[in-house]
Length: 467
Image (tube, helix red, strand yellow):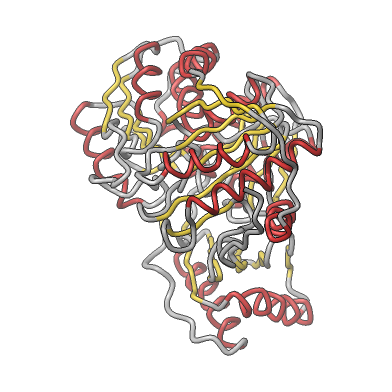
């Protein structure tokens, strides 16, 4: 029962544990995570762990194995069942558990799955995840006679979200759950919210038969855009596979990107928290940071990664943070974790009480053109080296470089970013300018830097998205 275990070298990631089911991630891995993480919890004096799982076909088996591992450490496990990741975060806080674990593949393809963890009120990431591999490899486990029970937190979670709805007029809203883990909660939530609600793909189905559950990729929003047009909706809201990332559509059918949403939320949050620090990742538009400053807030650019932003929020006392990727975190009234359902409640409340369409709130930001996130395939061994080489060349040239996470370079045309992904063997690039011509020059700078490091850089993905 306490054998040493070695994980596949690719599964212990910066922010979570993730792999291909039956290949790089198995039930034995999940049990070993339970034993290793349970050991960390028990040695820290913890007694209780909440566990949840998403709608993927492999999730129930992995959840059962994980629970076995936790129980073998002498812990009491509260099994909240099938639902979105933020419901697990909520349960862990609401039940004052020592830790929480979610079985989820997030927005990855159906054959993937993974594990997200929290210890106390904070995320588990970086070295703490690698340490689990060390514990498992040595079978350095705590052992005891634990127990488990099934609990239902769905109504408590929904009621807590509804409590923060502050709208004053009814809206028509289309919601796309993408057949992900949010479906049942979405039905319960919209039944308690005023207005008219059109639900798409709210049946949980781990094969994702309608579209891939990633609302930050515009092709996955086609059905939501169609529903907004057909029903004359005020807003469209979409979720990823485990409900911690939000996408939004205005009544004109335009995407409101993650950084634009943060700017819209910031205008409201700063009324209650004047001068507060609002955090966004290095991929966010400069217009967001400028808008936060214009509103009297303190803009802070930080590293990409939901765990890293949550930790920075706790450190700075920030009431709001967000990523380009749609992870948005409210500590204003909420708990500081990324919750797309809650973000949806806050968005429709905001549009309702301001009596302005979402399109007007979006268009307050200066128009810019930018690229989507563009990924260049580079080996795991080489990707960080390339960033350091680029940084060295730019520094020698006297360029205006922010190196908080990769290199973000400011020029007269705008800015461009190159960073190494913490979850894939790729370099991520992005650029933004006030003009199409300026954007082309910025893109050329990225390509030139990659070529100077011996990489054959493909073209950026088409276009400049109006943003």
